[in-house]
Length: 97
Image 1 (spheres, one colour):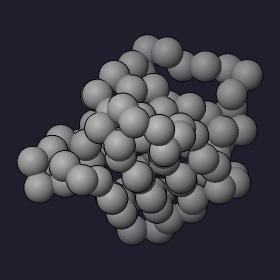
Image 2 (cartoon, rainbow, N blue to C red):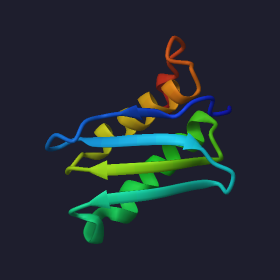
Image 3 (cartoon, rainbow, N blue to C red):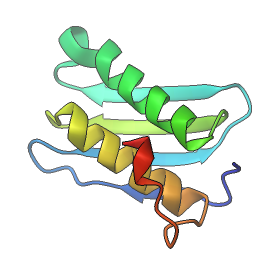
Image 4 (cartoon, rainbow, N blue to C red):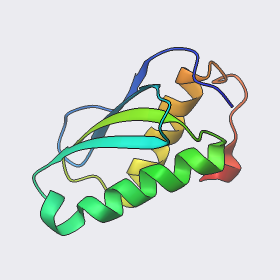
C-alpha cells in the first residue's frame, strides 16, 4: 500500500495521541513526543510500527504527540491516519486492530 497524502488523526487532549503521517523512503521513521517517552516510548513506537506494517505500509514518516494514550487508542489512531493517508477510509480493515 502507498501513502498518497499527508494525514492526521487524533487530538492533543489527555489520554489521546495525535499522529501525522507522510511519505517516507527509509522504512517507518517515528518522531515521538511524549512526557512518558522514557518509560513507554519503545512500546508506543512498537504499536505504531506493527499497526502500519499490518496495514501494508512499509515506508512512512510519522510524527506522534502522545498525551498518555493506551495501546488500543494508539492502534485506532494509527489505523485512522493510515486509511486517510492511503485514501482508503471507505474500506476499513479492522482486522489490523
